Length: 162
Image (tube, rainbow, N blue to C red; front, side, top):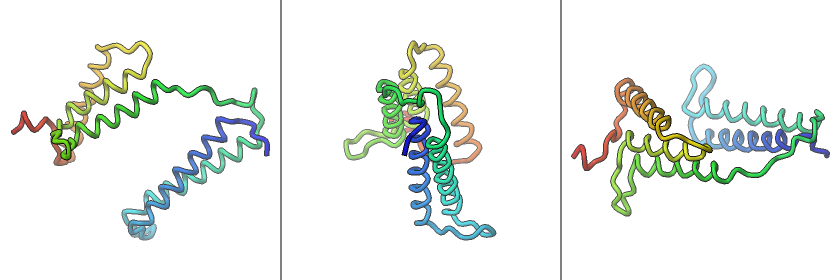
């Protein structure tokens, strides 16, 4: 087996892995049928489609010749760190950590933290642009989730709202 495109080969494997995981996880819910879909139907179909897409991409990487073999480059450690850290901080700020008595800071502060930390992954990020983006995301999230969908979760920190 000769891999003609490393990027496509490993991307296809990733798609297949995620697709199989989604499909397998969906089987723990009631799947139902096409006419009467259960909560597991959509994730099951999405997982199957992702696995099929991954198989096609992997097959293509073994058959279609690419210029230079499409080698995989170095890992971008700095962006990877900041993106993962942004998501972890968002989850902690949104829900808090009761076992260390860290209160929930709410959606607005969590979105600002997520945006600022994730923006640090970009080379030469600017405070003003990030602040504008965070504000648009916070206002949009508030309108969509709190006003339109009427979801119940903390918007502001507990020590402000009481």
